[in-house]
Image 1 (cartoon, each protein chain N blue to C red):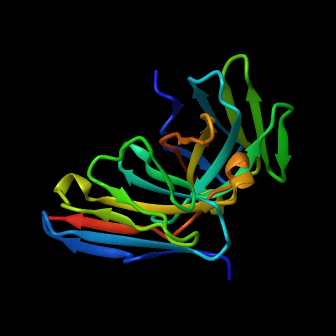
Image 2 (image 1 turned 30 degrees about the horizontal axis):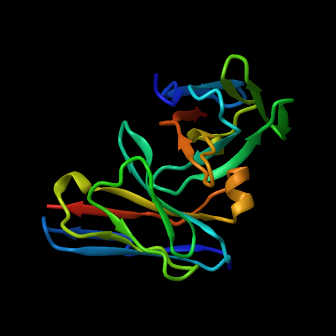
Length: 115
Length: 112
């Protein structure tokens, strides 16, 4: 089954404790992206990647890191989480032609709470 | 002016009603446009692309007006299952990249 898988789906952590949210897709998509969704603010892009070893900042990259060492994986790293990073996070992927057509395939989301 | 603006709603409509959502975008160079649907606590999913000539998919009709930088979505004969948040999405291509910008969404509740 074609899918984007995120883990963990739910996480409660404390300020400053490094964490990684994994994202994996099995569709051989070149494009991958991370979004956060907050009430009243909608979906905002954190980082994206056009292909292996190619990453770029989105609209709200502060406090986050990403890597793209393999085509299928695009982990999101919070080196020192803070309460303002409490949010619902979505990973998404698309073939490059798909990115041109706008069809993003989203994971089910990861709800992160930072105390 | 925000990049992509939508009326947040909520729109509360009875079953069978026709409802229209509007969206405006600020970047005149935007290249492609879409409507996504997001159910409560779920991930967004592509509903339909929006073409300049207008396009229809069953009960759903999307329109684009490039001169006014305006996109619309019309839902006819609303069903209870149409209750969701509808996201307007604009693709602002940057050199060598793509930038999909999401509106904040319009919430629709279809009432029995």
